[in-house]
Length: 152
View (spheres, rainbow, N blue to C red):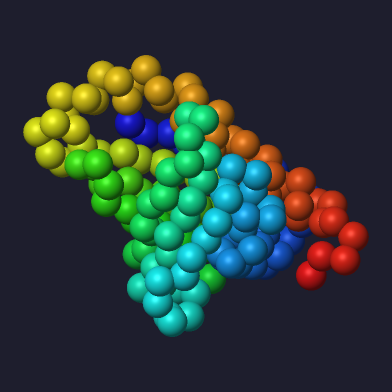
């Protein structure tokens, strides 16, 4: 399953990139994320690992993520291996009309026999997944364009 979603944010690329890579504070910015636990002492970049807990399909779910590529103010890639699938999320940041075009490409690739058998269910959930990804980008946009009073 592949999903690509983008949005225009009326804020500079550097600011949007900084917000998106401030993983510790993601729960206060992205409504679907309930908790982030850093799993190593790596600086933000390739090798940083964290456990993200969010609400998915009405239930709490935790996944261990790792940054697998990192180009400051341009893009980064998160990888995750769970339930027989390899998940990849690529976030790209491009200057766009005085602001930022933020694009997220999400890919789920089944690697085990059982996961491959379940592939048709993935296609049924594609619309819901697209809405979840869009909501994350909308939350980032809202925070970048109008941070709450007292926010850093």
